Length: 462
Figure 1 (cartoon, rainbow, N blue to C red):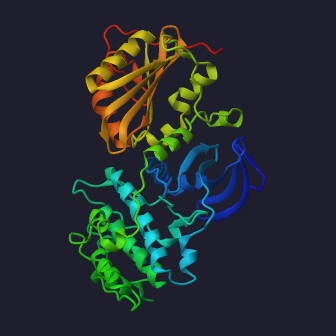
Figure 2: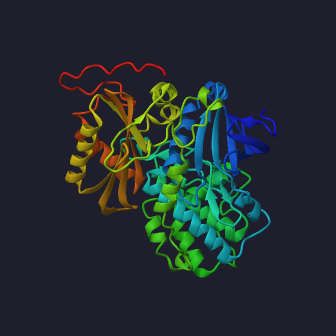
Figure 3: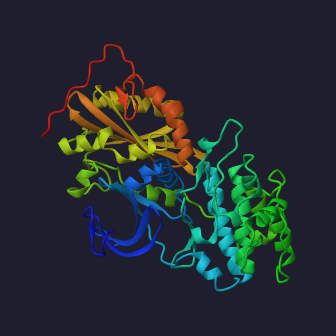
């Protein structure tokens, strides 16, 4: 057990324990560099390996990095030691929404505001192909300003998890909040199942008790399957009507998020949240994961190396030392351990034997073909899209690192725009266009074929 005052990987000072489960404990902690409060989730690696939950942990990390939104608890960093995995997450000091409801029903305006924030965040998750599958007041936290934050994505599912019939088939969640199609084990649409759970949450906020409740769990399941619930007399007529549309046992006729957000009762005082700048700010906070053991001796926040300053005409790449090379190698990349399978990384690297001028020219060609604006400075190339996407214009940053005079590493990452649009651009436009200069992409098992391309030189430790 971690003790209060323990300095974790020279980065965080642990405080009191906030909560614990079978495989993890959550502590309040202080970032030694910034002084900010964070929550550190400590997972026992041996326990999760023993019970086969490592895939669930991987999924939770991938999902939390994909759904960055003001009403979702944010993951700042993932670290590890030989025996533990550490999540450094946003500290939400207001506690669980459940604690508020436990004291009694909420006023209509307060309940509506929480419900609006919940639906806005759930809609964002669904736009990323993520389904939470365990929405309930215990997993909804409140910050110091009373804003709702969705937490605990351990049971979440990604779009890729669906079978060929397009449905999810894992029965999970908390019984009282689970949609009837999940209970019936016939396959279900994750988005529609989440909407049902949101409806149960709304009922609980306004009533102070569950819509489907019975001491006999099988009887409760029967009520859920038939959609049998009764609204208390103080519910406004428009809320009763809305709940009948949300808690519809037939997923095919159940209201969608889009239609729900057009509902007059829901829209009252609703202010949609714009996320591009918030997403970018959080991208800047997300460090490049490096050598796990090296984290004890070096500060790797913000990446393994700093960009050298220079004029726009100078394209001299940043030089890498021995520690940088180790940190960039796949074997020490903790994010690769969790995310290679999901292919959800917001950045990637490739190696090349081509000189910087050739690399830059290739990016300029891509920019011209795809109508991007180009800025060059000190070993970096910035591409700025002209088309408006879901989250504004796409921005891409490529930085060139020199390992030896004849061998370079190029790191490519998103700086603005929608993550899924960036991933599609990389897979369908960027990577095919760069194939003539790439030696290998990090994480790929097979080298890209190239005429008369020599093997990369072995860098000598400095």
